[in-house]
Length: 101
Image (cartoon, rainbow, N blue to C red):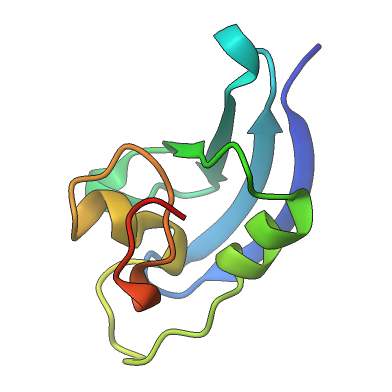
């Protein structure tokens, strides 16, 4: 089964459209968030991948993707902050300062 498309939005940090997919084909039922950038994202890369916490529902993933940034001039979109600012391979609610959920 191919990754499933769940949403699309404009990413102002990179000036391009971002399309979001969930890949559930990973070992042990792990899920990945895959973001494809139309014109390229961080360092011009066309794709960003991060793990999704096991307990998160699809609605929680969508809420995370659309989380409003406190600082409009933030260098990364919400979905990249765990990786770029905290070095985490998995999404977490960075505004709660808890890397486990």
